[in-house]
Length: 83
Image (tube, rainbow, N blue to C red; front, side, top):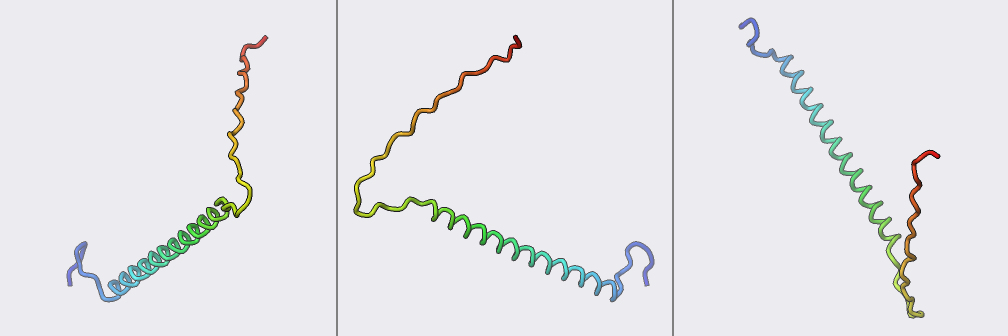
């Protein structure tokens, strides 16, 4: 049997490394599934919020006139000089 840095792995070492690789693959798969569910939930909530904010169409009633928004008045800037 070889000795040193480049010796082949023993059966129990190979088994251990395969177990670690399987565990990591499982963890990654579970994380991807969790992320997908979280994204789906977020998209559903966002869609519901957009539906709630959508304007309700007028039903055979008086026509509503759109008014222009009031002009915004700017405040005068204060001088920083100390008197």
